[in-house]
Amino acid sequence: EFECFCPLVPSMSDIARAAQGFVNQPQVWVAAEQFLQNVSMQDLCQALASAQLSRAQTQSCVDAFERLLSFEEVRSQVITDAMRPYLQQGAQSPDDRIRVLIATALLEVAKSGAASGLLTGPAPTGVDLLLTLVVDPVMDVGEPVSEAMAKLVVVEGAPEVVAGPAALQVLQGGLSLADEVKCRIMDLALELGRASQQAFDSCASAGLYQSVINSFFTDDLLLKLVAVELMEKLGSYERGVQFLAGADVSERLVVELEDPSQDDTVVVCVVRLLGCLALKSEAFVARLLPSASAPLPTTLVKLFRGKHEAGRLAAVNCWSMLCAQREGLEFFVNVMPDFLAEITDAIVGTDNSKAVAVMAGWTLVLSHRPATKANAKIQELIVQKLLPHALKALLQKPFADARPHNWQLLAEMAHMKQTAQQTLTVESVRDVLTNYRSEDSANALIGKHQFVSALLEAHSNVASTVFEDETYENLCGYVKGGPYWTPQGAQAVVDREAG
Figure (spheres, rainbow, N blue to C red):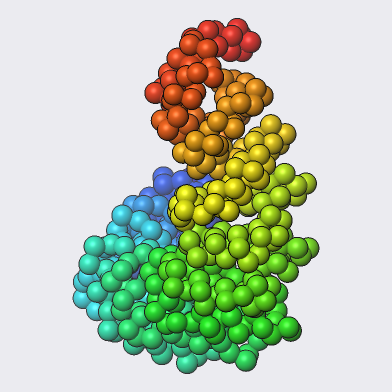
């Protein structure tokens, strides 16, 4: 037990002394409960608001408040009618430590089961307090408040408040403040929009997402580099991509690629965004790929052959999104066949990260079925290059990060009769298929099961003639039993080796 003797009406120094004693104890509820029997939350808030404490005493009270917030029993008591005046006073305090404390308290409540209490009650409500602090110039204040608002918006009835007229007015005002605050406000708007369609529509109407675009297309390089992340975030979810598509920014993004002095980070961001736009709508593809010498194709070649992994992966991702559309795939097959072959050859190359990216990229392409049957050249590419590379990688690359992508790619090709026949004629591949212990990771096991299931579903007649009856029956049992199924005899061997 710690010494915590306070009179019925404790003085500020009594509260500070009790707070210091509490902070020195183990962080357990018994200690918190004993402290609260002597010092109420209101007492602690009064002490924090007092001008009678030294800096060290104030810090003890701050530390005690923070520790109390770790307990659910206390978080539910933060937003009460008795506490509101103190929270409001703390939110307006000139002491950064106090404002950080209030911001942290609001975040903890937003993360707890008491989050709905922030939306209701007499003024100031929890949302009122959040809006007071969201434009605070101190990062340690503004960031937890932004996080709290992003968590709160998913609560029933929250979008009307968190992204309502009063909130939007505050957020719009933050756009005219220092760049750090401005970027934080735009980032918050993106998170609100990701969580809620209603919030997204409100933020879009208020011009918050247009501000993200305007910040990206600026001559201020420092702001532009920060806005890169915001633009990527806007393009990372469906509603954001739709907004970018409606804003018709593709031509402006392509112009960014024409600048030879453009920052590499900006180039990678632009390539990613253009890929997202192409995947969203085939209408963008013709504009982005008018010729092999156009800015985007030449940039993809440069990045893919470059030294920086981020650039190589961005190039592969953008290429795959373009090729997921029929017009994009036909462009690379007919106009840039050498580059398409170079990308495909990476599957059996020495750069494992590039190989994984290309396998994932081709999986995306084939999953969209961009008229592969209608184009003889595409069929030829798949059968004569893509499938052999995928099978070779399966047999020669045991890397854990590559196996799931390898199986998923094969599964996307399994519906084609030529690929099924070519796959099953390779004895070493058949051995892998019937080796129920060939994979070590869950993702690889699931990927293999997807492939075998697709293969037998589309070409059971071919598989039944290639495998012996018992082996084929085991494969059928594997398809029905799931990724972790093994034949009874094989399980016995596993048990003996494990024992």
